[in-house]
Amino acid sequence: MNFKHKFVFLFPGLFVLIGILIFPIIFTIRLSLSGWNSYTPEMNFIGITNYIRLFTDDPRFWESFFRLSFLSVTTVILQYIIGFALAMMVWREIKFKRFFRVIFLVPMMTTPVIMTVIWRTFFHESLGPVNDLLGGLGVKPILWLSDPVIAKFTVIIVEVWQWTPFMFLLLLAGLLSLPKEPFLAAAIDGASPFRKFVYVTFPLMAPISIGAIIIRLIEASKIMDTVFVLTSGGPGTATETSSFYIYIKGLREFQMGYAATLSFTYLVIMIISLTIIAKVLTKLMIKE
Amino acid sequence: MSKLYTFLKYFFITFWTVFVVAPFLWAVSTSFKDFQSVNSKVTYIPWLDFEPTLEGWRVLVKSPAKGGVDIVEPYFNSIFVTCTASLISIVLGTLAAYALSRFTFKAGFVRNNDITFFFISQRIMPPIVLSIPFFIFLSTIGLLDSLLGLVVVYIVLLMPIAVWIMVDFFNRVPKELDETALIDGCNPYQAFYKVVLPNSIPGLIVAGMFCIIFGWIDFFFAFILTFTEVQLLPVKVVALNSSITPWWSLSASALVSVAPLIIVAFIVERYLSKGNLSGALK
Image (cartoon, rainbow over all chains, first blue to last red; front, side, top):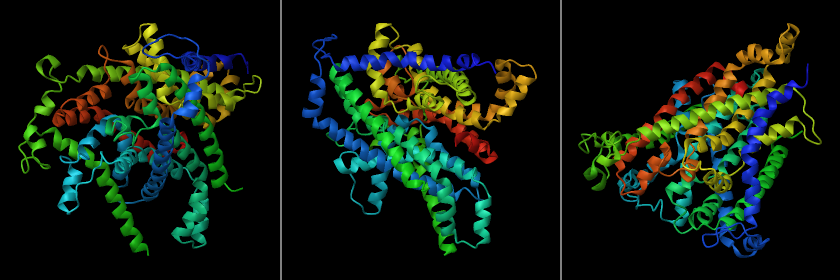
């Protein structure tokens, strides 16, 4: 085969992507070394002043980062458990199998911000149905959106609703592609459903699980839309994630230089931590 | 034991189904309400709890000058941006994926896997990191607040998905297929176009669906990079949220916006049941 052709296939996509991305990334790095804000909107050079500020004098960013880690790890774990359970349930024949499969997939097809707008009315503290129905059971109105602790769980509920289907889809597709032989062998050995799951299904699903968890973690680490509409980061900063904080600094307060510093640091932390998580998960789940 | 298990299973399935459907039912009900039935007390069932009106749906097609919401134009903008960006991403992504699956690349320490990883890793990029430079960049070249600017940005969002799905898919299409075609006298482009591509239609459909989903549901870039000239659907709907909460038109427009992609759920399910997807998504 003539090997010149391979570049014709690869380069259009590669160069379009690099072409679109290279400027923003270089620009972000350069911007992070400048003091661009609404008073001096220019590309001056102030060295690593911004980085020093970030690492010594900005607890709000680190808090938002830990909050993001908490939210994304919790939602992904919940999504994995629920998604796996749902996938197991509609894997084999059950009544209305296809109906349930469609229902379980629907939320991921809906636009997160738009559904969050609905959720906001749903969890509305005096006019929403949740508190009304709970009130019927004698429960006091719950401050879904204005209590700093409960607001986090409201975000988690919405995120789980929205993205469990994605996990469900990846895991069900995985289950459906598993070879039949190990299950036959287990059936012949008379293994109980529980043992079958622990010794056959789960190990076979390990690689697919890791892939699904990492994909979801990547997407969950960008939680922003939900928070933006549901709570606007509030009450106070109780649900503020890193992206949202950078958004406030950059595009509301117009501290472009500092926001670029935050962005770049955030990106580097994201890449490093996701790589580590991927390595650790692979070690934990595949024992060889 | 197994009876308990069956009971738990159906209980859980029912619970989850109710949970999934609840916000939709609430939105449908709310879209027929008027000021009175939203603000006095919580109401659920039309005719029984409140007198339904079509006002929420009617304002959707009225022009803003007449107090309407007019989501028709944002609707077409969203369709245009999503489809254009998906199409470009699929074409470029499929070509690149084919190259990465069939040929060996070597440049210094960079191998095929590294290039594939480079493509896919763009999904890690938090949108906020790109939005600030894109904001400044697009405003310098005058593409801020335009459809073209958004298409460019969406390609970054969507091409990684196309490459991710198609590399895996091509890896499962037997190599002998193209080799036979080459022996039969096709050049590499013909082999790709006439032999490999027709055998990859399930993969292309899956990749296309994912691109359309992730393009359609994006809010953040549309929110930051457009203002008044061009509005996409999610931005328009969320803008309704900030005013004095006309819940009825809000619900109606939300339902209209999420409706088209629900069809995709049916297509995905079809592919799952036929077993085509299992290969394409592993």
